[in-house]
Length: 137
Image (cartoon, rainbow, N blue to C red; front, side, top):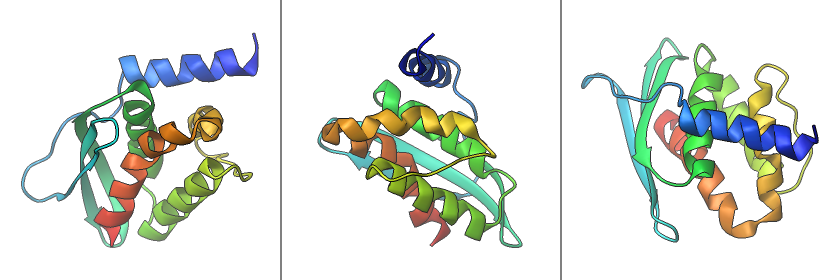
């Protein structure tokens, strides 16, 4: 199996079997973002206590790239400090710009590395991560 095929499978698994899809009550930090270029939209909710992302959930509609990225991101940031979560977001942004970035603690994210070859899709992949940054700030 080629790496591209494996990455496609990981992306489609997160799209068809989303992790952390849903909502919390009113106590969560909520960020709503959309990508007007393609119509992707996300509502990200974060539970942050004592500087730690205790939990993360999302709802939204969009392409397989944006929804898979949201699934991966919410999985990756749970239990991380806000600094660690922002570091993940920075590494993801670097990867989207074609740079090298490793995600040893959550390798599924690397499945999105090929998106940087399609500039129009980068906004799809970064939508959830931008919501994370905005929610933490």
